[in-house]
Image: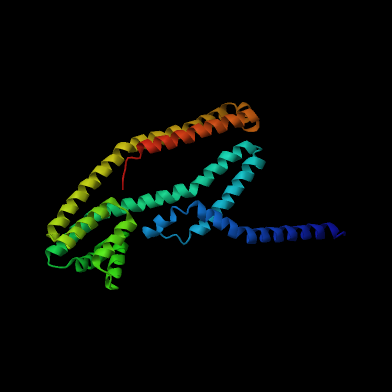
Length: 286
């Protein structure tokens, strides 16, 4: 039995594995730098909102693998190299879209929790506690993630920083309308004097009204957002229906140059339309 072909196959497999390992070893730092730069403007917001970004580099590496795999699959397996460009572009935009969505959800959650926190802090002020003591007292009853922000303020205050500076730092870090109103009113009371209890009660009512208006805006634009998503998926649905009716004719769209150009143009128009509609419907300010 001739063992030469088997030895050649084993040797080639080992060489390919070694080449892949060397490529990953040298390309990973370069890719990590590129990926981090891609989301560099969003990571400070994640850090300011106490979002866990420790797993982000791992997700970005898998994102790069998925982008490369999608490009090879579309260009080689489906024999549509022109369609690989918009496919890679959509996957390229995915991390920023997901991180922005996570930041927006955290800001909305903080906004909703501020109303109850102001009411609880007003009750502690009515009971005679000072603001730092009241903030420390309401922290265990405050839900996350607002409780983490209160703990951070308490920690900075206990380390010897003035309470006003702690509030200003949290105000700049969160950049949230509700917390800005809350911190500004308290700072005015601390610097110029005033009844803290009445200020907190008024802030609570103002935040509750602000929350009601923002939720009304979300409800009013919800139907428009659904319509945008439905219209964005309509070309895909129609293409699938035509493929069921005429597989041979519809397949020419993916295999011919004219068909691929048509798909790219339609995809660009849909993408631009969706982005335009999202900007029009983006009336919420959190």
